[in-house]
Structure formats: C-alpha cells, structure tokens
Length: 210
Image (cartoon, rainbow, N blue to C red; front, top):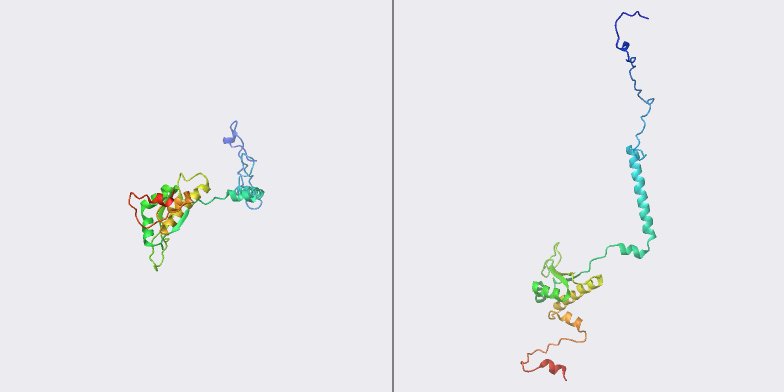
C-alpha cells in the first residue's frame, strides 16, 4: 500500500462518500429487459398491448351488435330501415306540344299545387323526337308533398297521386282540375255539349231536369 503523501483527497472530507464505480450497462441478449410501465388503470401502455386491447373491444362490440340484430323479429329490422319519401314523377317529354307547354307554365303548376297540397316543378330537358338523349333526364314533372299534405306517409302519398292524376288528365286533353273534380264527386261527370247557350237559357237546369 502506498504511503500517504499528505495530500488531501476529496473523499477525505467529512460527509463525502467513497468514489462510485462507473455504471456499466450490459448490452446484448444478456441485458435485463426494462420493466414495463403500467397505466393508472392497471393495463399495459405499450403500443402492442393498446392495439390488442382496442381490437378485442371492437370485436366484442361487433359480436354484441350482431346478437342484438339476430334477436329482433324480421319486421323490426325492416322498420329500422329508412323509408322512401312519398313522391311521384310524370314524364312529359313525348307528350303533345299543347299539353307540354301548358304544364311547363308556372301558373298551371301552382294551380295543381293549390288543389292537391303538393310541390310541383318541371325538371329535366326536352329532347325532340329522334334526338339522342344526353346525361340529363327527359322532361318530366316532379311532385313532392307539401307541408300541409298530411302527417302520415299514406296521406302524403295520396296527395302526390292526386297531383299526378291531374297532370295525366292534362296530358289526355282534359281541362285543369277535371281529375280533382272527379275524385271529389265520383258520381258526376263533365259533359261538353259543344255550344254556348244564351244567358237566359239555363242549360244546366234543362239537363238535370225537374
């Protein structure tokens, strides 16, 4: 052991500790693995463990949804599907020119709307006879129920059907409102006699009789 040369070393002071050996971190396969961090809820926080947990939860949710769907009766499954909105469409592209021009007028559309509680609009594009059709649909009348058409789907669809009947009546050459009048009075009919009677001659009374 070497003699003390009288020089003061730093670990000779009171309270100082002996020099620490350098920390050697082993490498390779023999190195101990670092302990896993644990989350506050007690589960692992590594990426693989989190992904595995999310995958298991997703599979469990799918299995629960499939079991709940299988437990429902067939009618309940159909009721859950979205139902189409009541509507009607009448193609007028190939209709006679007079009827097509009449239905294209906004005044005629508003007249049908007022009687049937619907929203009537002209859509599409007119294609002359023999012309090639493009991407746009041929000219047609779109009918949708208005806000006052009714609450149930049956009432709203009935309103659209009544408007479509009026459009088809105009296409057949009947006057506007003829279909609505026939629907209101099924035992009455409009007969055109082909002449105008003078004001003093009550033609309607003569036809109805005593």
